[in-house]
Amino acid sequence: MAESGTLPTGFGELEVLAVGTVLLVEALSGLGLNGLTILCFCKNPELRTPSHLLVLSLALSDSGISLNALMAATSSLLRRWPYGSEGCQAHGFQGFATVLASICSSAAIAWGRYHHYCTRSRLDWNTAVSLVLFVWLSSAFWATLPLLGWGHYDREPLGTCCTLDYSRPDRNFTSFLFTMAFFNYLLPLFITVISYRLMEQKLGKTGRPPVPALIAKAVPTVNAINYALGSEMVHGGIWRCLSPQKRERDREQ
Image (cartoon, rainbow, N blue to C red):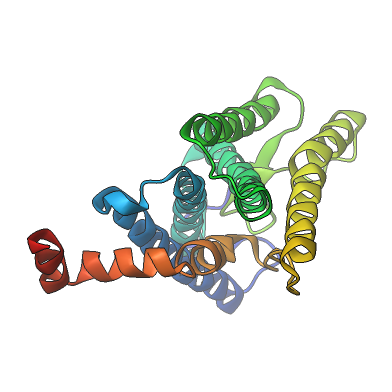
């Protein structure tokens, strides 16, 4: 483990500073935008619908990713990992669980939109709650497996962030990677693509499903803009949250 004030092997001062700065910007923007989404859901009764519960799940998972990025940014600016081996395992688990929850929540939103627009029936609370519970329990399950010995969490090359150790080419990690990728990447991607394609055929509109960001830590910001802040209903909720005069007029009405 690198000592305080020393640079990770193979990296220069500017590189470490740049990584820390980018992570910090992504973490703060993700926390701000997704925090605003969560606040709007909590303060505006009209936003508390089954479909918006799925968006809330996505905002919570993306907030978790941003918190993970904030820890990584702090470590990068300190030039070392200050939380020890147990902290590394906890950081890896928290980051992996929230990433999986974000991916599965996006797939659930895609299916929910297909259900709403193509079957013309509203999503009910029981279905929405069941989907959210499944997303989080499944994500926690898969993120726990590396702690139990199938897969492994370790520091990435910069040494200031912990994630799955992709450098291990052994059969244990390979079997975990391919199994996890099928259930948590390929299957959600299939659900997302099929849902939007069916919506496109049904509604006669051209469009494409959301494309994953090139930098994983930027996903919370992208999702907040795409799913939450891009909704007209949420726009109104945000305006009411930020405008005391608007809230007062709504109460009078």
